[in-house]
Length: 230
Length: 166
Image (tube, rainbow over all chains, first blue to last red):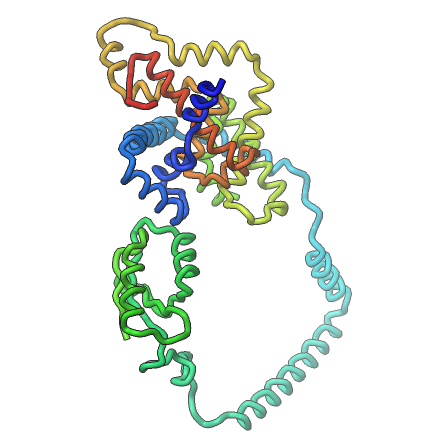
């Protein structure tokens, strides 16, 4: 009995083993992908199974791609069915606009002309008031859309660390977001030549801390380059 | 609707075809799927990718279509998919081709196993997304794929191909 349950346990796949197909398809999150990579590096049996999985992956894609595409008949059938659908209940906003149209349609041309003239005079008056207020409050100089020196990122010894980072071409947005969360980082500029400028936290760091941070970043699977910048 | 159809109809068709194994039925299926989407567009909550939503509807419709067909018919099809029809040299060479054999065995898997392999490998769905499409817990997704792969290995072994796993 003991031997039997031991055998059953041995046959049970491990968590990592079960994740291998998703690793082959590139759909694991960064944390799990790292766990699988580490396991593959130390377990040749697992690596052998992974090679088998990669073959299954490639053949499954081949098989599906060989299935071709549906004929135009499917699309014609669909759009004919949509055309045959009963008209949808109009939305409330449509009802309101229909009511407004009906109201104006009921007015005589003379009344409409008078109303339009009155509306135009009201608009001109409003424009004049707004213009006067703006001219009165204008400080006499222009303002750029960029941040003022006080608002822009600090430079100097108290500035939080910055780095230029290049992500792997196959990095997913979710992985990049997770990495930014993990490092409490934000993208402050990019992507110029594929490089993003990242800011880490809001506090200054020592040179050693920054070097440690860069080393850690370089070990991330989705990071291909990380260089500290002022 | 045309944009949505243009972007997704091929994958929806292929997923449906792998489940129902009949082009005519699969084409009818995609018309039904997109018509449902057109009718229920307001119910899409955006919590999952559009493709995940579409594949879940396709699966539901494909299973309904399958239920309408006789089981015996399906069993015959599955048997034919792995049956060695001839022993001529050309076929013998084909059988040695692991890729070809793999594709034949992928076709011979059960519907449950085919769909999970396709969703993970071809449609590149995560564990969570497969769980949502198939309507099973995430752990079951993982074990089901493992046993689908084991079954695939058994079929290959029966076809004379050893890959060193399991």
